[in-house]
Length: 276
Ligand code: ADP
Image (cartoon, rainbow, N blue to C red; front, side, top):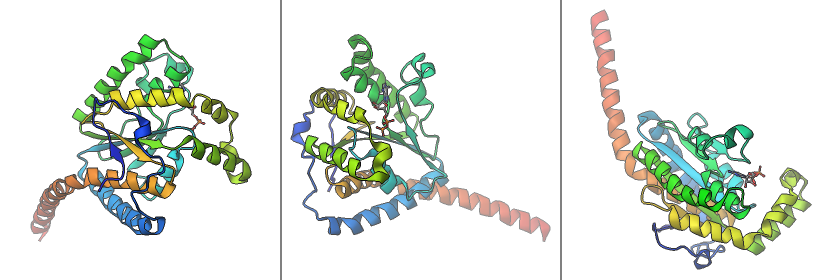
């Protein structure tokens, strides 16, 4: 059972079809041990991914302010080995970045073989915030759906597994989270009037997200809509999707490792025989 909604490419997406409050009929207590099992399996798969050095994994996290990108990173990727897992965050582009094509800074952050990279925001900002605020003329951002698909195809054909997640929260939930931050000094660093200003553009962002999800969900780089009002369910759904996408590679990675091990053992044996 998949808790994240995988989108079928090319079909028009309407976010109102997905309930941000969704929890798959689970209770938080029942979900906790399942989530722990997913994390344990993910740790094991990460080690095999790294050791077999065969594939790269790119996880794209997008969502409105307070949708839980940071929390997702903490809960799912925090427990992984930092030797082969890193986060790249995309902020307002610098002058230097703006002097290049929009994918220049993004391509530089894609995962190397054996590595997992998590994009906290991504190249999709260039068809989201840029579209909503008119930061580039329409023909410029409109061409980017094609550019993005071609870029992601290049990554996929270069053995990068690309999984994209839209963290789907409701407007009410966002308000509650923004207000809660104002009560919690440990969250003060996250306070920003900008979040309240962006909230005014809720419908324009909905339209921008729907078009990005419609145009850019492909077999080789699928989008998933993740109900994200309940943080524990969001974590469970994303962890499950990643584990299920990596699991089919396990047998292949194991057999490659066995071959590598057999070669190394043979070399060690030859070395010892020569010395004896
Ligand atoms: P976050 O909200 O992700 O925790 P920040 O508060 O620093 O982190 O926000 C990053 C900001 O950078 C967001 O408002 C986002 O829309 C903006 N941003 C990211 N990429 C681009 C881009 N290509 N063009 C314009 N703004 C961007």
